[in-house]
Image 1 (cartoon, rainbow, N blue to C red):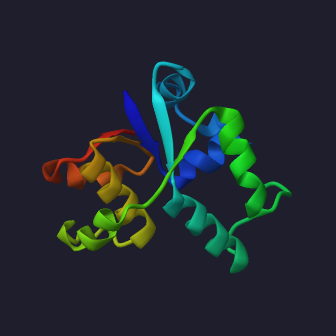
Image 2 (cartoon, rainbow, N blue to C red):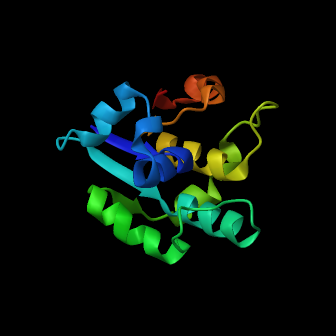
Length: 133
């Protein structure tokens, strides 16, 4: 199976894996699964770090790539088509975070299963989002 993890799951995977629910941990460690990290998550981490809204356990954002590789995850580029068709994702009043919305759109466009702890993503099921919370 092919999964994309949201930024929160990425941070926990790197720095505090015990905070991840067992059902998601099982997916992450199963070597038969392909686990992707969106470049959007990397941008979100860097932006929040630069604004002082995120601390990442004494490392700099540029060192996160090594951790992703060590975990066996693959970094997923953001494709031009994903950017240009993003407007097709319906707006939800309870979910306005542009980083999360782009990750959701990447999952829908690429038929990836989103791993998240954010229960608000359930609203996107009707738009084709597959997920595990």
